Image (tube, rainbow, N blue to C red; front, side, top):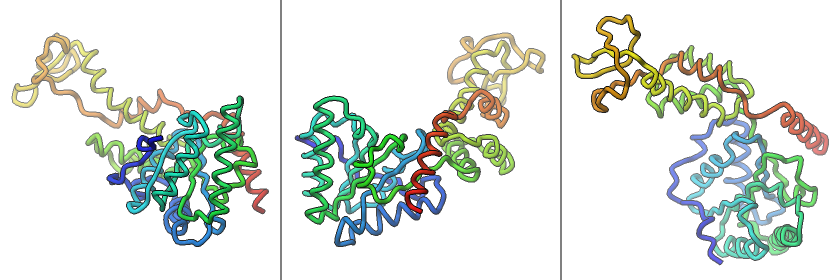
Amino acid sequence: MDMQEFLMSKESNVTLDDVNLPKSTVDKIRKHMITAPFTSESIESVGHVLLFGAPGTGKTFLSSAIAGELKSATCFSLSYYEIKNESIVRELFSQAEQRKPTLVFLDDIEVFSNSKDDVENRITSEFLRQLERLKVTNGSDVLVVGMTNKPWKLDPSILQWFQHRIEIPLPDEDNRCEIFKTELDHAKVSLSEEQLLELGRKTSGFTGSDIVIVVRDALMEPIRTVQKATHYMKVQENTKWTPCLPDAPGAVEMTWTDVQADELLEPTVTFADLRKSLSNCRPSVDVDYLKLYAQFLQKASNASA
């Protein structure tokens, strides 16, 4: 069976410098997934890794950044839902050993704990068998990285294999400011430091993906302005038309369909546009999810105490 579709590119230019995470989290990732794994003599002293965090906190992007740091290693990435039968599990681990040093990113790892039929039971059994085989054969050059949004659903028989559990937290205020800055820089939108700080303050509880949605919505505001405008005026030495208020000097009653594409000047995105988008957006992580998440963290803390 061909595992090529699950191979991650070695040409990625994304590294851990590109992720917006607390330094303590990045340090743990470097230690347990980059520095230690492929130098230790035994997988027991290294340990597989569980990355857990709310949806939208950037676990998939993080896996690309980790792969970008490990140019000499082979990296596979797939979700539980792409594993149709146990033979895929066997072949995945077989090729991982043939191509070692290897990282295997397995998303939706919690679903291994929720087998509902014979096929799913065989998939889970084979997964556990392969982890046991790695331990017996001293397979320290193959590291499995489980990723999940719902760590509380992991059965102890699965969870025990992931000695290192790294939380990918919701971005703090500084990280949120950085995410806004990165997204706006890509769109060539400049804000003052004070404006960025305000956006960071007002987005407590937002994931990175939530912030991206806010920015993308704001980027659409000039287009909405163009489509709703009833009057336009000439600018840039009378070479371009741009939307304006009906009482603006030089205003001409017309719609965007009356303007040639190469003569249209869209308004720039403003801080007011971002404020407007923010007022229409809410965090995607709800209270019930946060309650289950907090219970898992408390249980994990008690277990390690």
